[in-house]
Amino acid sequence: MLRSARLVVVFALLSLACSGGPGGPGGPGGAGGEEQAKRKVDPRTLVTVAPVGPGEVAATIQSTGVVESEAQADLTPEASGTVISISVEEGDTVKRGQALAVIENASLDAAYERAKAELARAERELAQVESLHKRGAVSDADLNTARDALNTAKTTLAEARSSAGHLRLVSPIDGTVALRDLRYGEVAGGKRAFQVVDLDRLRVVVKLPERDLSRLEVGQIATLTPVYDGEVHVSAELIRLSPTVDATTGTVRATLALPKGERTLRPGQFVSASLETERRQAALVVPREAIVYDDGQAMVYRVAIEEPPKEEEAKKEEGEEAKPEEAKGFSFSFGGAQGMPEAEEEIELPGPYRIARKVPVEVGLSDEDTTEILSGLKPGDEVVIVGQANLRDGARVRLEADPRLEDVIAEAEAKKKAEAEKAEGADKDGAKEADKAEGEEG
Image (cartoon, rainbow, N blue to C red; front, top):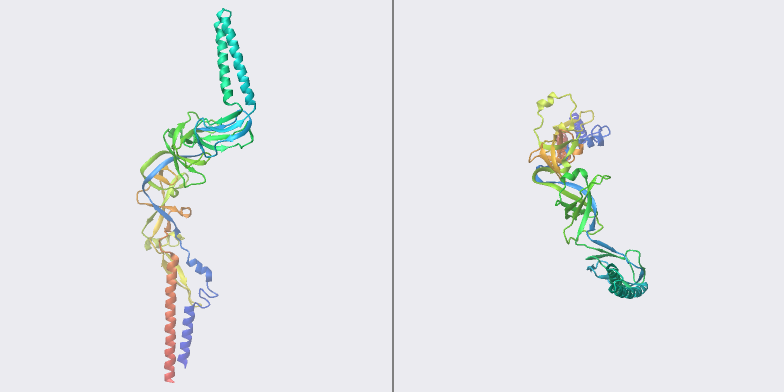
């Protein structure tokens, strides 16, 4: 009977130890959720890296401007009148000399009559002067003046005859009707009626900093991108460069011409211009976001797999405060029975021992995506492009593909739990055997 009681006490203690009990991590006296949270903190910094290698890089100058046409005409009626005919609409293609609209003006009839009367008077005066010239009463100069007056009167009459009763609005250039600002029946005059634009000759005028003047040459290529559509890119050529600098802004005026017939961009669009001044085809490059600056010095974080610190060196540094990123492993505890110490296990951080080293570099050309490296790195090196804001020199890092610490901890906890369940089952089997043996003795 005494033996049976002892077995029951041993079973109870084992059950309490396996379940954590009041003093375990999950009981009232344990660390609870706070300890559980501490177990899952990975001291490594998650980063993204990119390889250093040969690539193409260009030096550019950035500016903005508005697309416009080399040829543009605003048509305004020379005299007011009623619109009686409109022969074109917005978007129509027109030729030089083509009539766009007709305006009726009664005063033009009066002008025609005046022109006829002026011609008749000039003819009479010339006849008189010629008669007097034959008798030697007037000079040759007077005769020539009378003849000029007659010619002028004839020209005026021809113009008045062509516009008698109406006025035609004629396009002065080949192009496309961009605006029609008049309507049938209205009295037009004094304001713009049409705007004609040559869409085959578009340009963008930009203002570039004076400091870049030595880098600018006619013939350089620029890329134009609409502000509201970053997916569109149109090439343009620097065709004119002002010989003077604007003293008020410190800029120089440059004209970028689009290819003839290019219709992707339209007059009036606001665009950004990236003017290429130099290009290198096989430079050693890194993504631009890899470059960080420390007191004006360009730096990168180079990531490499290193050998973990030796245990002897770790012992020498014993007593010093350990830095999380220098730790070889990671310890966490499994709760023991009440009044018993917790069993601690050191879990090795999974994955390669990656270290980020801060490396000074000398940079060359740089564009929107890429920066040239002149010294400090070699082909095949890997540099941090995401996550460097939280790094310091010598920090231990991990990549997205590396095993996670929480997965290792979860696996270890699952293993412990399985071992505990197995031990509990063995204890129960032992207790049953003891009860059976006691019954047989009785």
